[in-house]
Length: 283
Length: 255
Image 1 (cartoon, each protein chain N blue to C red):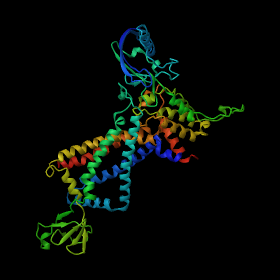
Image 2 (cartoon, chains in turn cyan, purple; image 1 turned 45 degrees about the vertical axis):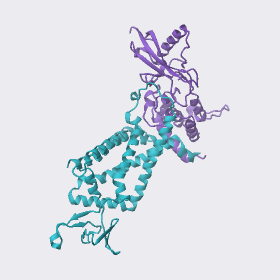
Image 3 (cartoon, one colour; image 1 turned 30 degrees about the vertical axis):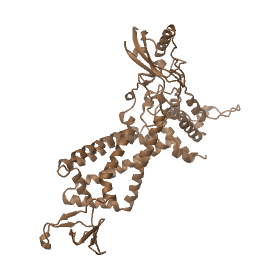
Image 4 (tube, rainbow over the protein chains, first blue to last red; image 1 turned 135 degrees about the horizontal axis):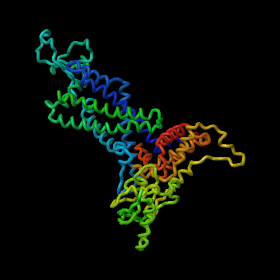
C-alpha cells in the first residue's frame, strides 16, 4: 500500500509537483546566470566567452545528466499538473452560480494551471528558437571573426576565420574551397584530417533574434518573451512557497521567510531574464 | 442599536431530489429584521412559502449556536456568507442592506451530493473519520489516567485547535478544487500531536487519505481559501503536518 501511496495518492502527486517545481527553480537560477553573460560581457570577448560557455553546457557530461533531469522535470511537472487539474475539475462537477474567490485567496494561486500552460507554450517556442537549432537541426553557424593581423599573414583583409576550440591552434581561414564543416568539426576538404573544432555562434543568433536592425519581428519576440516572464513571475509568486507547504515544510519560524524569499525570487528572476532581451533590443 | 426592517431579494438553489435537475429561483422577502440570523430569515421565507402553499426550502440546521457543524450554505459567493470565523447560524441580517440580492447555494462537491435544495450529504466526512479518525482504547476498566502522560503545552494547544473542527465542510465548499485537505489535516493533526495518537499514527494517515481520495475530493493547491472561510479558524499548518505524516508513513509503514 505504501508504495502505491507514494505515486497515486493526491498528496503524493503534490510532493512530485513540489520536488520538480523547486528543482526547476534552481534550473532557472543556472539558466539566468548563463544568460546574464550576454549583457555583462560585451564585444568580441563577450561573444567568445558566451559561445565557449554554450559549448561547455552542451558537452560536459554532468551538465548533460542535469539537462535530462531538467527535461524530465518539466514533462513530469506538466503531466502531473494536468492530471491534478482534471481531478480537481471532477471534484466539483456543478459550479456555483455566484462565487467570490477573491475574498479568500490570491489570483495566482487560483490560476496556476493556466499560468503553467502558458509557460509550457513559451518553453516549446523557446526551445524551437534556440535549443532545437543548437542541438537537433544544427542550423547555427560556426563562430567566425575577422582577424586584426590580416596583413601580417599576407591574407586578404576580408577573409573570415573560424574561432576554434584549441586556443594554441592557428586561426583557420574560412575558406570553403579548402575547409569542410562537419557539425562543429573542421576538416581539410576531401580528407579525413581534422583541423580543429569550432564553436557554434549562439551568441550572434540570440543577439540578432532581439535586434530590430536584423530581425523585423524583434519587437514582437521581445513582447512575447517579456510577457512570458511576467507569467512565470506570477506562477512562481504562488508556486515557490506552495512547494514547501506541499512537502510539509511549514513552521511558524520560517513561514514568513519562505514566503518573502519566494516572492523575491518571483520578481527578481523573471525581471532579470526579461531585462536581457530589452537591453539587446534598445542597444 | 435599534433594529430595522429590510426588504431583500433571494436567489436560492431549488432541487427536488438527488437526481433532479436544479435551478436558481427568485423570491422577494419583506420586513426582515436586521436582528434576525440568516437561518431565521430562511424560516421567515419558508413561512411565507407555506402560506402561499408552495414547497418550503430545505436547508440543514441544528444547534444554531455555531458548534454542531450542521448548517452550511454558500451565501453571496462565500461559505457561511460574508464575515469570518462564523457558521451560517451566526450570520446576522445586519450585514445586509435594504434592497440587497442574496445568492444562496448548497455546498458544491462531487463528494457532497445534494439531497434536496440546500441540503447536501456529508457522510463522506463520516467515512473518512471511520477510516482512522480515532484512537483504539482498551476499556477493560484499568485505563490509564490521560493526565499521567506528559504532553507539551504547545502540542496540547495545537491538538485542541485542530480538534475544534466541526466538520461543516466549508473548507471543501470554498476550495476551488473541492479538496477536503483542511478537514482531514485537522483530524490527522489532533491525534498526531498527542502521545496517545502516535500509536496508530501511520495507519491513520494512510487510511484517512486513501478514503479521502476514494470519496472524490479534489487536490490541494495551497490557495489557503479553506483556512480563511473555516468557522473555527483552523490553520493550513495542519495540512502541512498531514503531508509530513503521510510522507513518513508511506516510506516507513509495514504494510
